[in-house]
Length: 423
Ligand SMILES: [Zn+2]
View 1: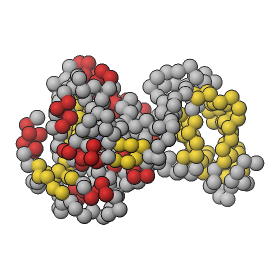
View 2: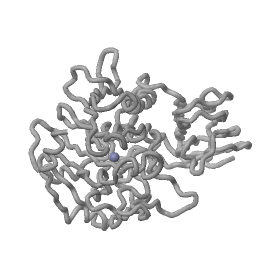
View 3: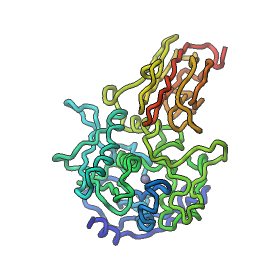
View 4: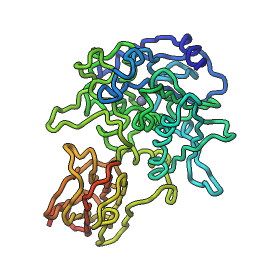
């Protein structure tokens, strides 16, 4: 892509020695590549991020040359106003200026359309892989990736150097999503880049990440260090999510494959898995819904909100028949002020995995997925499991991965309780 090569010659390497977050050594070393050229017409702050490629399996570095990983441009901040602006990119664009716009009227009311154009460089199989990332957004969120017709703003998906994307809506007439052939043409990477397009930064760049991961900057390839920066002002709509498709893996951009660059803390067994590129995690889906305030009818709703009911029940989809693959259901149970939510699962049968990274029930002590996680449940449990909230709300997610299983799911009852404990 001509633009890319031209733009790269304008990159100016800058080192910022004093950021706000003086408590964190690694942030003092933040290296930012800034486009040293005013961009006509842009009013938004955006950046794009070079991705590490999967290190194992058929998409490993033997297929895709290692050199590709080291020739990226790091974070590309588009300069507007002062230089700090490019440092202040939010994890997502809660301010609204670089979110994609919501359709206000007509048959598409409430939907957020993101027009895309795909380069002719891809063959039919590759096109199918790229397009396979779209339905999960359509089913579970109000985002609609639609073929570009005459829209002025759209994303252009092309065979660039490596995998990267502009974050949020940039304000350029067309903005780039680079999916290099063949290493980047993988559904999970496309999902990851589309999350950048929607406005999300990497999970490990969240303001609160130092409580969940340790970054070994000394192990990171020098020109990739910016991909490990932390953003002080990120807006965190959900709890920290190791399972996010936006989280880097343990040895992402490592100088040597055996040197970790991202370590889960505190160390524990089984250790949370980071760097999955299979699907949107339950929290990835939830944060898209929060950021875009997806309304009723803009996605396939599974689950229900219960408000001020003294008792009720709910179950996994199709129960007692097996639940479908890629289910995403949420229940918000809010009882009267001063009361508490007591939920009892009458046995659970969902597919098991070491850290419940596949199919899972997530229980939050509050009204949404930003509230603390009380329980993470998977596998088979024959007896009753009861949980009580510490406030008047409980938020429950049931999520299944793309693999269809024969597990039957669960049924649960809830009741209003006078005590914030089991009685
Ligand atoms: Zn990324």
